[in-house]
Amino acid sequence: MATPKSDSKARPLASSIDVRHVIGPVTDETVAAILKCGASAEDLELVACYLRGEGNRVDREGHPIAGRVAQLYDIVSADELYMNEER
Image 1: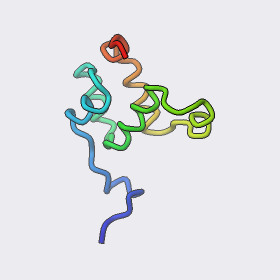
Image 2: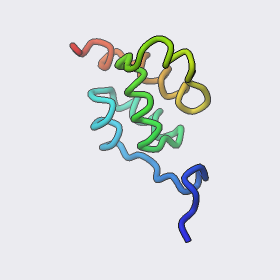
Image 3: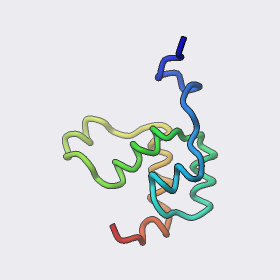
């Protein structure tokens, strides 16, 4: 029987390839910090959405980031390589 998706142990952890594929260009230090957090691919997708500013203001206010996703957001948004890329 499959483990429920809400069980954090069942979530596969992201790899460095996943980080660069989902988030984009970031420094090796940022990748290491993200991996150290135990991020899943799902976490990375959510962070990427927030970094791109997807959704309207009401959506974002109704779903504030917290926990690991907030930590990942802070890590990526502090990365100079990521912030200097043209979007």
